Amino acid sequence: MGTGGLGMGLFRRHGGGTLPRTHMLVLAHRGCHVRAPHNSMDAFSDAVTAGADGIETDVRISRDGFPVLMHDRVVGGRAVSALAKADMESVLGYPVPTLDEALARFPHLIWNVEIKTRDAVERTVDALRRFGSSRFLITSFRHDAVAMAALQLGADCGLLVAERPLSLEGLLSPAAPLPRLRTLVWDYEILDVSMVNEARSRGWRNFAYGMETAEEHRLCVEVGLDGIITDHIELGLKAR
Image 1 (cartoon, rainbow, N blue to C red):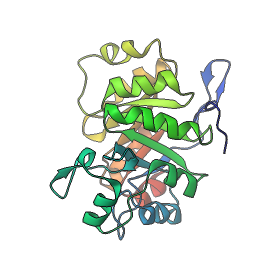
Image 2 (cartoon, helix red, strand yellow):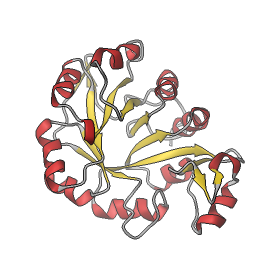
Image 3 (tube, rainbow, N blue to C red):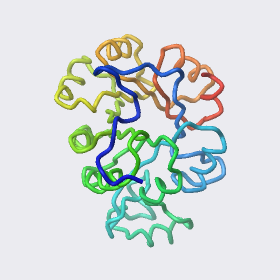
Image 4 (spheres, rainbow, N blue to C red):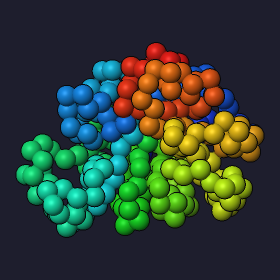
């Protein structure tokens, strides 16, 4: 694994532009958790077996400073930030992976790393710098946090969008000085074809999350999304 800066990122570039993908990426939302806990090594392994292109996961910081893969803010009635990694494992009953452990275990997967809190930016950036260059998409609902990551890493970064903006301009303009921040990840509930097309025309890639039915997955292909983050890997693979 390289220890220098990250390279050209998840999307190949040529002459300042982005080459189109031949198919929509299908990323497993917190792994495949039919039989295994969310964000566990078993869930990640099951996602590989199911044929996912990659995995979406969530990073928080434990009390003892580990970048743990944990979606929920509270575990066993206590904030993740107030719990040591071993305490979480005792409550949950399974090993809680760190970001480093997951990346080392599955070195060839695409990883969508969602930064849950601003205090997780530094440890996430440090971890990603220790690994390969072409398989990361860093995202956050904390747009300030993902902007911090975009300033420090040569990896693709994206804005998670859970509410339809009044204007696309207001969403995209603050990212203009950050050339690595050129991906939007839409909640399917608010997916707007006109905004997707406008964003694409301005050089932005578009992902979506939260699809439930076969029809919703198929529509993501028809819209021309670059990727989806799904709990239903089989539906995503079949749709594309």
